[in-house]
Image (tube, rainbow over all chains, first blue to last red; front, side, top):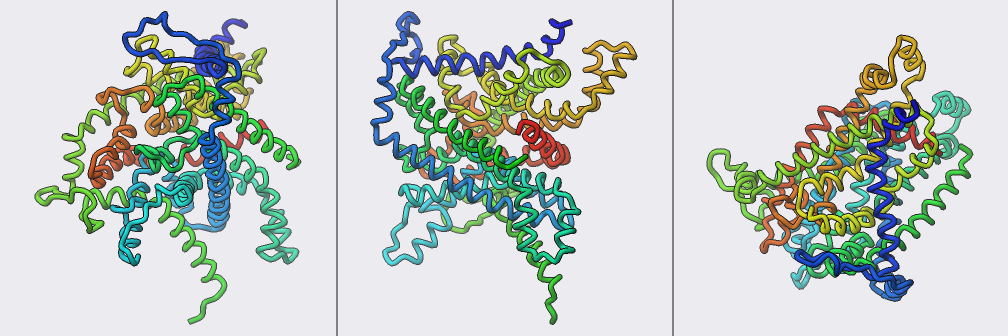
Length: 293
Length: 283
């Protein structure tokens, strides 16, 4: 019955081959080629992928815009991971005690996860708007010149603004992961610590935190991956106008593919993104292995 | 008044929770308030007009004049078809992965991670290229296919974790009773795994509804826009009609919230089991 067994995964596998196999091969090939899009009405025979070697990569990596975008992405990832971990662990710890209506609190905390990120970003976009948003209004009231300050147009404040929204969006996920980790903490270990006279801080440092290390590393890794590949929030907050102050790598690749139609270079950029992410994932696996689990 | 240690703990715990929840739900609350009232009170978009049910005027404008009835329908069509397709492919696949020892099973399961980890844009560029060649640009099918390609691996992943927990003795008993594997799947796994399947369907639907990058790359025809795309596109008007945007956002967000509230227990229970469980096994 071997054939019959494979029948269960065959449709999914075919879909996966189309999803993973084909784009990977295409993108890898395209990153070493000059590619053009099919324009409607074009003769298909004109489509050519001309092999150009490392040209795309050298072109990308020597472009200061690329490094600016990469730095933006790195800062954003770092801020999002740190922020969401701190808030997530804190909220999970609070929830782990004797709380009335725990499930309802949890469900309400999950709301940023359920709402489409692009839609949530629109609310934040209004708030961040220098003319129409409340902080902008207050700024104008209290500043001497009465001029407005366009947060989202300056790289520094814009990065902070996007980070805040990202942290808001990712904290629920961390709360869930850490809560699950906390549930597996044996009560007796904690009770033994209390019986030994450990203070709250000591209990956290010596019993709870080591147990949580695994959940923290995994949720941090997943948050990092999500932020790295995220497009919606940054695009809505800073990018949909003609000038975008904070481009992230996903947005940059999107521009190369769908605005400038430089598909070879966009594929090359994607490949560099994957290389960077691969290194980060390896780091996390190494950290996981060190956790004796 | 004596504030003892217990009161302090009580205040700090529930105070933190209130603060946390307030921050998390504030965008939704803001959407609802600003789209239905004149708050905020200064000029920031069309004010609500008075009259019977005047507080719903922004919704009426957005639904009819703004064509959001069409966009809502598009979102539903695409999300439903994606969910149906993904779950019906994922359930047998998860059954297969947990019950049979495929030759490259572990490698295949690892490959399942790839669309979830790598940037979407990496896959979308080749798709667009193919879709334009196949003249499938601006179609429901191309959108659904692209959605499924990202959501299917996720569904398989979660269902593997859930089906893994279903004891194999049940399979053995079924076989003794004369069940073939397909019947085991139909009569044993599906009913027991029903909770997980509902949970995964909810996830698939939510993820599809949230999707933004795929529509923006695959459709230029306005009639085919999904809700997320249409809402973001509202930024292009000048002046920006913020209250209408909020009304449209509420229309986009509330169905997901209602669904999650109704099927909420599947979310909180199944998620911790599925994600953490699977990760614990992998790591």
